[in-house]
Image 1 (cartoon, rainbow, N blue to C red):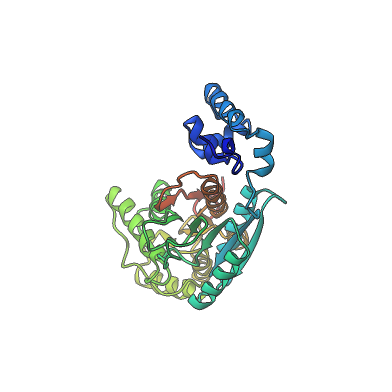
Image 2 (cartoon, rainbow, N blue to C red; image 1 turned 60 degrees about the vertical axis):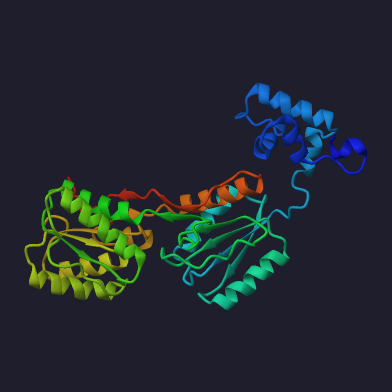
Length: 341
């Protein structure tokens, strides 16, 4: 017998779902008249709600009882380069004025992160999105957190957590496939810090694309910093050692901007003589380059929307799964690889 039938307490959404033989998420959708619920299922849920004296009206107003309409976004991205578009995407999914976001910057400090985590939980946030500075695995917040947690960009090191991160391997492969499709066969690679998982994943994808085309990199990958200064110096050294290079895949748009500077200084025409492709599609750099820079876009706003949606689903009782999920990236073609017609 349901709890409200004994008069001890009101029926809950879980009671309705159990009576109707459906999940909590399906019961919620049915009571909210969502289109993605079969007619027979909706009728079964409504009948169960009526039998338990749990009305759709009460559910619409009371389903969020105990919730605060707030979500925490815990980041370690000091510059906001990756966090800001992820936050924008999350806010798109949350809806203006419907969910408030508490933004906390841990500044890469584990103690500060724990302080912010305690503060968010004391505010009774409904869920937490953790955004990292890089795609290397980061320590999990643990399995005892009382609200749903989704990791974005930097995956958790615990496979029991749900993590969403860009597919850097495919990004590297796409970059080189594009250069090959442009007729380039003597391709080199200049990238950043070799300790970054992103750097290693991108070079692995690039090598796979080269191998599929029966090609190899010209020289060894050049690793150092994610800076324009490194791009300029590396390009000068590369083009001195290997003047035959006809394309350079750069591990970031900043590096690519430096490569463009050196190419221009050395009289190498881009893209006619030398094609250059970057990574991140940081538009303030890529669209203001001369020529504009072809780049791989990590789709960070979409990643933020996905993370927010997974938090919503978990709050609604949906099993959002676990493990690390690599989300699609895309190629944005501009003038640094394709000559103007």
